[in-house]
Image (tube, rainbow over all chains, first blue to last red; front, side, top):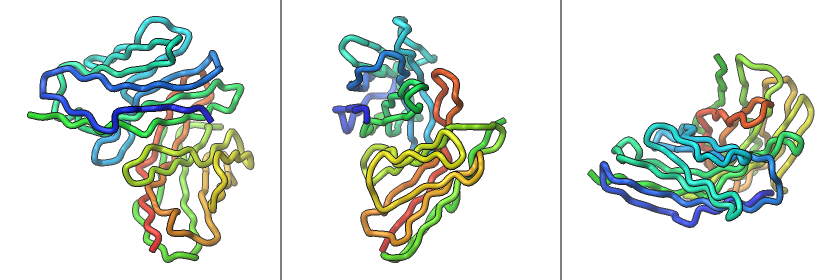
Length: 116
Length: 113
């Protein structure tokens, strides 16, 4: 199984400020995808952002952006202008190539608190 | 549009009892199907995944089994539950295209007492 590591169990940010969540992964594969998912108190998993390993350009979705460092196997999530609704557990995920079975592996998560 | 149904939402079972959790997907065909477990305060652990009817791959040895009797139906089972089987179980599906995301069900909170 691929290893996905989130070294920050908890993070906090002031409302309207910026926060960065860290994620590293271990792989020898080249054709993979990386994801950030959000799990609010409702426990429903919500896709935040997706990055293809072959694309050097960092993905951006409104206030959410990533810093993808392929050589370092690092995939951090930046949340700008943090809002109260951003409070949730955030999971980094690695999707294996299709020819291997398309497994998704998740990190242990980072609990984000947004302070008003 | 595609939807995923998972039930029940909550389940309390005694140790040693059997388990059957069901998940169905609508609006798509030939999906990849997955079962995850989320223990309290921990991440999502991949338990099983399936790329087709009757094709099940297990990620970790455990007290659970999975079956896919129909294209869009995925079942998680146990003959005898253990205390350590308690947790939040999530069913998910993805398409087969490159980079397709994972769609999750609403989850089942299982408490084994």
